[in-house]
Image (cartoon, rainbow, N blue to C red; front, side, top):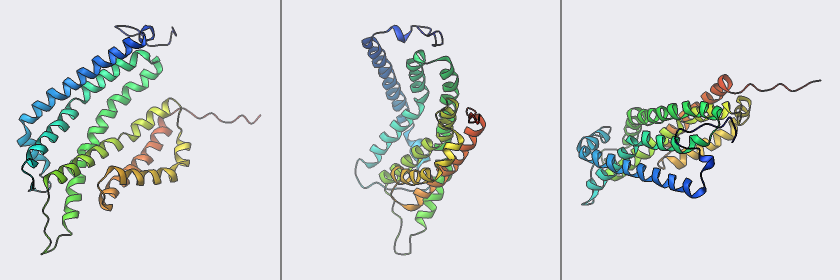
Length: 248
């Protein structure tokens, strides 16, 4: 076994046969699913409060189907169960992956996991507290005296969830860039050269990850491009030093 390989407390996954790896993965997935179920049930007990918080940016929403409000409560509970379970998911991911990593990889991966979690929740919170109210005010401004906003609860909830998840994911960009920069996969010069292509990819992602209206897409695309520029600075400051070409 390589001496640089991280020594696990319980066992060394290098010595485990494939079936034992799969069994360990199965056990960890069961624990993750149990966590999701328990936290979703607990969240449902507070679904009245959670539902009121979600609709705050618009004040009043409506449901057209008999099961509309109930299904939204279920979705909110599941979503909250997933969010609360993130530390559990990361823990089991960490326990399954770390024994097979090198010490230098663990040193860089640990802050990535910690700050990545904070950035994800920060991006989702920024979306809910800032972006969603602005977006709803803007979209409702197109109403007229004869054209009134009548917002369906299912459509509104889907809009909020998609936007929050999208912002949570894109806020990970500087963290991912930091990790790739540390292990030498990307450099600041490389990211700078890719800027034009990144802009195209950002616009495509904004169209895929948000509802099909230009305003919502721009609300995601602009912060994502700014985060890309931040990533260049992060890699320049923390990434591996680029070796100068030998002129001799």
